[in-house]
Length: 430
Image (tube, rainbow, N blue to C red; front, side, top):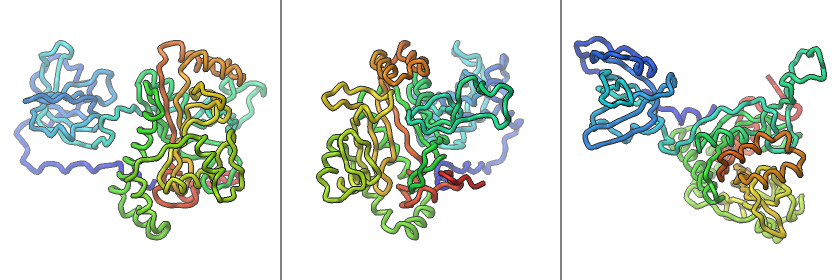
């Protein structure tokens, strides 16, 4: 798909120097290398990802893992190797001698003679762990009931029974599963398909679309969360512009003239922040006639979102602190009054409207218990409530629709034009 190749780097060319007079390096997995009990200085080749880098004056220590073992292999290299490119997450091929380690923590270590970068990691030290969240789920994360139910095509013997013993659906979001995993890995993300049974044929809605979602532990303010959201948008966009120049220029030239300047305007300015209450007041004072009358306590429509962005000088704008009644049970109560709000945030961008949606999560047991009880969801989400009983921490997260992101940066008006096989109401071709 468009934009994917901007994230890939070609393998570096092999050296043309004559081969030394020793046996070719034997390729070992990390697990096999760690399992060697007696070493004779044999030359080996190990491929994997860098899990840590420690640089000293005369020596460089790397820990490499290829997924074959929970334990990583320590690589000892001369400080002449360029440690700037040897970043966390980069994939490497290391050739050298497998020798006995002086450390008691491991039996062997790899004394590097050659380190080749297979793929750089642009995330560097961001530290996010990629989680593959399930596509089939028993949860309705958004609480809107816009779900596709999953059932076997052949009739089971007892119609009253469910294949999974509980009703199952195609996922609308990986958020709840990410919350579970953020309790172990602090910062996690997923990128995969989501499904909404929304009866809409608008230019920005699909029944199947892709989402980038992240969840971060120990986040206590929307400001911290918005910083990550803005950073993701700007970093990803600058990567696309620098690595996919011809593709982007093609769209900007023939589909959206002037989009390049609009995009640069977004990138060079700090994103703005307004509250939901301020947004409603701006809309009420607008000279424009809206199809849907703006009122406090009513959700913002696309026409409202686009107007707010224009009002803010076509700079992306965060709208924060939405009415509690509009948002799902998991969003953190701001405990304000009389207009009761939650710590929610949407990022609105030119031409599209809402691109990101996120919030601080309700980590306080009794607050969450009360919200679930009022919604009649306590039994279904007891597992989620239990997360607050065992080492709960303040946390938050967000999701970004990938197709809407492509619309935004390319200036494409209809979301159905940025996905190869669009699925929407009354249409599932191929």
